[in-house]
Length: 424
Length: 148
Image 1 (cartoon, helix red, strand yellow):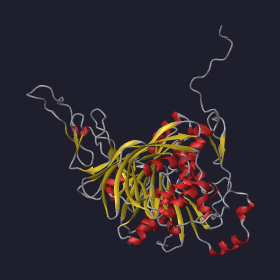
Image 2: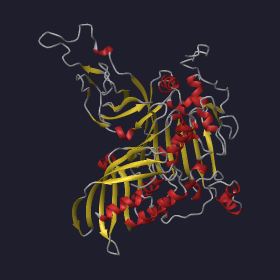
Image 3: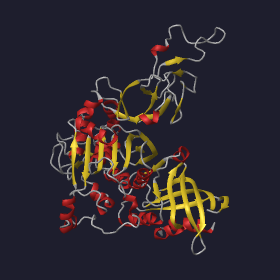
Image 4: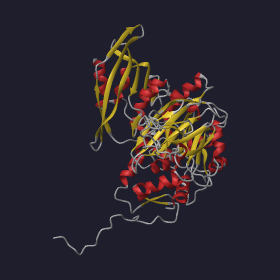
């Protein structure tokens, strides 16, 4: 017999624990709940944010389009004959089918395959098949106006060849959204250059998208999880470097440069050995040409990781350049789209360096493969722990720029922007 | 054919240290996808132009990189011999690779084809001067650690 004295279960529980009013705590339910993901769609991806769509170089000519996404929603980014870039949802206004089925291409117009409704390059509905019926019968009613129907259109903005879009009418202009320091660091890599794509790969991550964008902003983990970096002295916390966090908190730059003086000091007293950290092995490369590079930006900065809230990353690791687009595919799945690039005026020697250095990044990257699995370790680790939270206290409690990278300031910055937008 | 079978067994049994020995000292080993290959994009998921780089890859997998323990099972299709020339013998071989994770999950991890150039090594056995691994899909699940 059932015991009728037990309390009735609550089927749709509120968050098991309140989110404390501090940037240094993140409840694990934020990575687990479907209702949180729904709020994110509305308030983050369709909210006051700029979202990376593609490179201008990928839609260089009038009629060129790329099927991309904004937070998982299918989007077409198109170059029209006026030279401008337009973005609209890749969804026919008739019955909701995808308008374009290829990832990219060149078209004069878009025609939905389902009932042949067609659109111009700006997403305006231009023709409805059998609109006036056949032999006077059928057809759309008199009151149907094509101009009343269009896929949702997005605002677009470009900066240094990067195409961003926003579903919001109230988002500030892209430069203001990014902040002056972030704009400068984008220009540092891309300013005045002509991008040429050299590879595109997708990495399917077994975790919530926020675990990946936290990881990108986490300068603390770089030399601890990624042993390859440390071993070959590409990136130690004792290198010269720093962290820029935008005023909103959401955008960041982590950078490092070889600090010759510190390198000599370190040779004398290894801070790493003293910490009993794995990072102190001494194997050497058989073919060091994989790391051969040049100071192509002329400032000695060997690493610059830049993120734009919510899901964009610009990466310079020596001469390995890439953009990454982070796309949620459910609470515990994320697509990470990598686009490797060089510049049109690369010498053959520089291009070869990029190809070799790309071994550092991507799904098999010497310094990035761990980022593909570590989010999954968290996703699996926090099962049953929705009443617990992550602790983000390295470097204090704020989300400000700093000269050290032994900090979680930019991770806290992400949550600052996230909570501001979502209200969570 | 025998070298192909030995190559697959070498990886599947986890004897990665022997894997570079299937290649000449100057060689190409690249993992890419059908889309990148079709578009002529030069970058790879792995990009190596010497046996030394393959040895480094194994050293990094053993000593530096962090990933969950797993193994592959290669199934190779019939090689299409594209003809022999002064450079060696070109062959195209389809493959399917299942990935067996630590906790037992077995999934189809990759399908694709090997675009090979085989040439006799110093000891007379066939060695790879070139192996372009063209994966059919452009999606890689989680990460790619062990070579294909």
